[in-house]
Length: 309
Image (tube, rainbow, N blue to C red):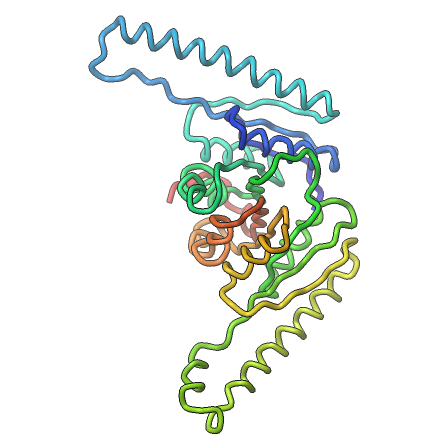
């Protein structure tokens, strides 16, 4: 997937700076154009405020705008110094709407966005900007968290359920990681619903271990096929099978393995994506200890109008 245009949300806070640094690294690799998107607050008049107060608020707002413009110009100069073509879009309105809309207008292949905090705290913040951007964007979204870095990702973890969507996610992962970096692929498997009942009735009557062995054998076979299918991807692949709930298995593996990126895929249009993200991908995005690349399905770009749900 060639990357020609990258959209990055900037609000002059540390998390957005982290996203900008990652975006610059990716843009440098692909010789892509970087578009910084800054959402300005709506300074509509406040009801029941006298003229003197309105004048004072207006002066403060103007001073803030001037300082924002100066800081944004400094960031653009620093990006150009690294050899990346960059431009700025600054609009008034909700950040998620502006970011997703700008990506659709420019036909961007990737959005980079920062988020605050970790796990529980970030869940609330993701719900306001990053989460909404992910759900409505027509392209892949990289949610950046963790330690600041001006490099590509070095230790990715790609989640798979052996679907076309997860295959697509794996292919897109190579565009944001270091050349030839090993990619760990994880599949979380579970026993079929009702298997617990067989164990209650006894091994002699219902050998549930046979069911377990069959499920694990099938997963192993699919994992081997996945590795063979992507043998020309340019990165060593290692598939790991873990029993348990997918979201828990993925985030635990990322923590234990000190991964700097998790890659997850979603399916379909934005309207359906709401339900899909509500299961595995949503939990991973919310609780990941590192950055997360959300790769949308092939149909995601068919509807580009930002729609609130």
